[in-house]
Length: 296
Image (cartoon, rainbow, N blue to C red; front, side):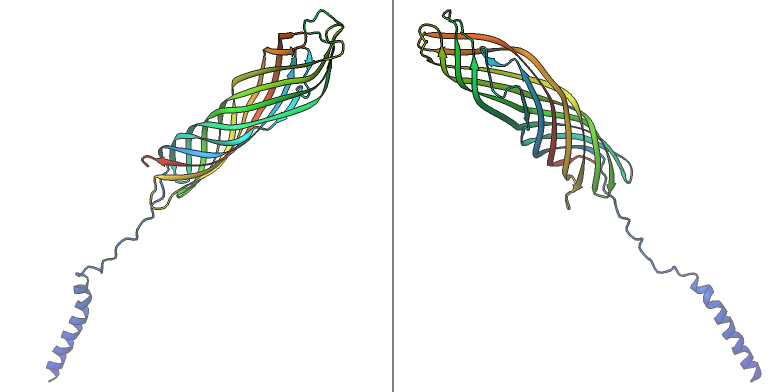
């Protein structure tokens, strides 16, 4: 009996010790790896359009502008603020060498409706005879002068440097700017012309003059913006952007024509003069846009 119990005890101990050895032959339960979050890839070429608003400042100074010797009121200086809707296209390329670092080169071209004008009116007086030999002569009239400025179009070529937080990009930008600035002036008077004979009692008289000048200027721009990829379609990107544009000084000097009409003489005098104008043009742009990004 003792021998039987002894053999049973040995068998139980052997079974206990062998259990872990057999268990080691079975693989552990399979646990799938946790998914790795994929960050948005900003790299690649993009192209799109934008729409916004521009508020410019044109410190316009004009000299030598008159109606055949009759000074035009208010035409010597005007602080104009051309403003209006802008719209255009942009294209560029992004590089993303690190997770949070993106740099780009971008160009855009904008059509502009920015314009402004200022008009001044008041009494004018002149001793001009407009070619009438029966002097002395005088003019007593009411005159007006209008100066206008318009930005027809502009564009930029810029670098961008940004911080990417997955599918949101915050960036600063700066580079070259260029644009077309149109400057114009209109002067007129209507009143009484007096000479020593035919118009000794005063005759109706009127006159006008006009100049128009367009210049393309090169300047610089700086700004900032934010972009974000649209959900469910990672190739479409929305943006909001601010740009400050400085087109430098626009200066010109050229001839203009003026016409005076005095029917009673009859006298129609066409004359030419030289007008000079100079202005420093700056522009502030706020716009939104959408682009399609290829690749990445």
